[in-house]
Image 1 (cartoon, one colour):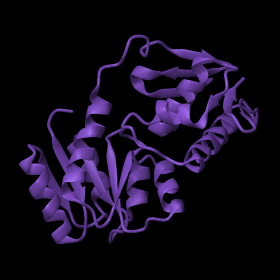
Image 2 (cartoon, one colour; image 1 turned 180 degrees about the vertical axis):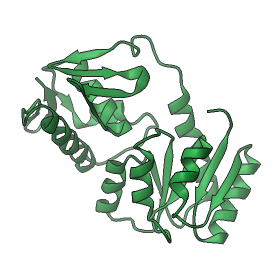
Image 3 (tube, helix red, strand yellow; image 1 turned 90 degrees about the horizontal axis):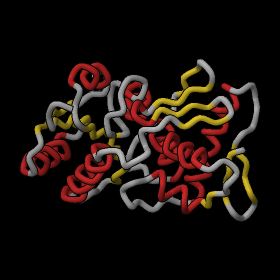
Length: 228
């Protein structure tokens, strides 16, 4: 990323201005969009360091924007929502959002989460993470955040990619939900077992479609998941 610009897609002027004030005080540049219609095009053209995206927007909703952005960019996305039920949170994660803040929120909390996520995504790779991981026709390229099954490229969210990378690192080993949570979320966030199960379910579907309905991720009752 060439700068520290954050695009804020928020239709409530007061909330958008509060975010601008606190983020710019912390050294970021900001750009506000009050409508979702042109958000994808602006994000694609602007190559921002970060996107703060409201869930409910005129023109195009936040989940649709998130899904479209993930087709061409891994830019960190923090979603703002007043809808706190589990279904919305899981759906957002499936679309590729990195984190959530529920309204009403403390502006300092948003700035802190932005900083935490940026540190995580910009940290240099640790020794060994550059190596290609291959197993049963599945290939992971960590440097490019790319997953291939044969010649087909799979569209995985960041959490799904890290989860699959963990499972593939030791085929046959059973990983608990807690260990998968630690390896998939690098910002010390605590998520529920249901969230981990949802990611595994989506990962299974994507792999199964690419592998001719072959099942490679298996569950061990009361323990966790493994790949074989």
